[in-house]
Length: 176
Picture 1 (tube, helix red, strand yellow):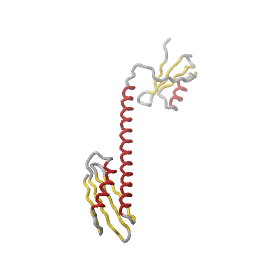
Picture 2 (cartoon, rainbow, N blue to C red):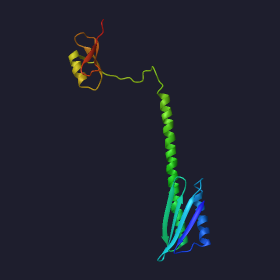
Picture 3 (cartoon, one colour):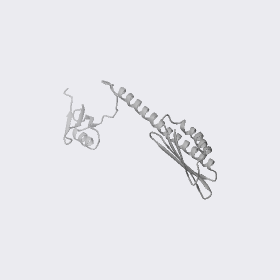
Picture 4 (cartoon, helix red, strand yellow):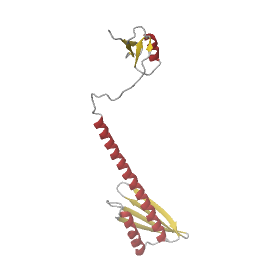
């Protein structure tokens, strides 16, 4: 961990440097890679301001607090940074879990698509006696592609269907 401590209108003493280094160990435990930390301490009127910026390989975190005590400002900054880091890590872990679940469900769906030569859906409907012209009108007013009915002229089951040109119809009648 590379730490750069800068003081504006305030001298960064060895005790402040040791305190910051010790407190930053709480942040270091969340990362495997090298961290670059920039700490700026300054005094404005009667308040002590501590600004800590943590840069890692992919993310950057920043906290600024001001209190009457410099050590309290540093403590607050560390708490804020730790919260930001935990929140970011939790989001990333959740995203990774969701991505792996999506992959698993996609693999499962690929496996279930392989069903062939099976009856997978059954629909029930009532056969109505009607003329082919009435059946054509009923099919025209529905979203279905075909309609099964009992032909009142022949008393046999017929099927009327829409042709691919969507303008004409076909009729299926049994011979015997």
